[in-house]
Length: 151
Length: 297
Image 1 (cartoon, helix red, strand yellow):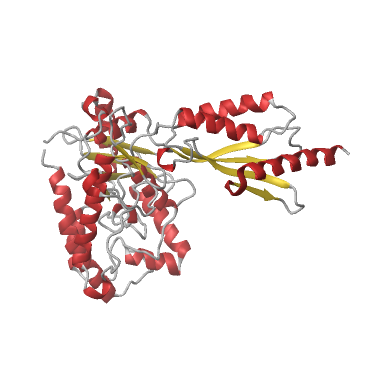
Image 2 (tube, rainbow over the protein chains, first blue to last red):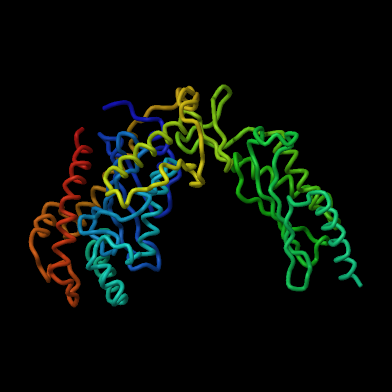
């Protein structure tokens, strides 16, 4: 593997020394560009109490290009599809090298608090979120309880 | 009356501030016409040579009803080129100044105090937001008009990459959707439009501090965290909570109204599902290969 850019090392150290509350991100033992991530469901959201596993990969030209992030734990959310892909502008055209792993994960956690069914990735979920929000929230809570719990 | 006396002192101070700072200061009044907030952006004194001002901060002083018999409530906003330790020093210096001037108008003194401090340390103490390293003697750096700092080397990389990405995206679009205005570079931190000469920047040397940075190594702490994460993963997998990409992909090939995962009362309509999910399927191929690379160890 090519030498790891210093910026990645610095971010990794800071993630370990000053972790973001509710978020843990640790590099894989054999690939320091691949991070195992856990995001806790935000309070007062249908995802409260859940621990969501994600994977995050820093591409070759990071931080010039955005990290690739995906949910591994199933989640019922209008901006996250069945394959765990996330619809979030900063992961696409609004990426900036001034963003970091921690800010990306915070944005994802914020997305859990503020689902945006008008910009859907999971169409069926978004549709229900718009026509019957209380039922959608019930589903999201049920999925959290069923899939995203700790031992 | 005491209240009137107090207002008079404030009025005099405000009048003096407006005479000194003119358009550079903003005073807000409450609905009774009493001044309640003084706001100004402070730069180091560099004989008005704007190019040599590397730091700045916006000073806001809220004037409580009892001011100047009590202290103003001071906030420093939008610091540029200043890190937290500099800001904390400024706050404690202001606190001392307020104690010294207890019971007297103090706003002008505070503004000058900050200006003196900024003039003394007129070098960005923050990190470069691109490489996360600081600015050392000999580093070549650029200040944007929005007062953000980057090693010229790092900024050049940002400008070249974003322009390349922009052009690649434009290629994919049909003519009527293309952006006719062309590429506009933006500041990585605040997205203000910036214009820089990439050719000059890209010849700058890489940041100095990078050379001394530590190497990455796996610690025991890290291994412990990894095994905890693995436990959670196994538990969630045993409960069917982990997304199985292959299984989901196979599902996408079928047109179904009721899949296990769909909410029971909701019928998304078959045609919609087909169009949307076929689209996702091809995207997924790409994503899988992206992630696939990560497991090459």
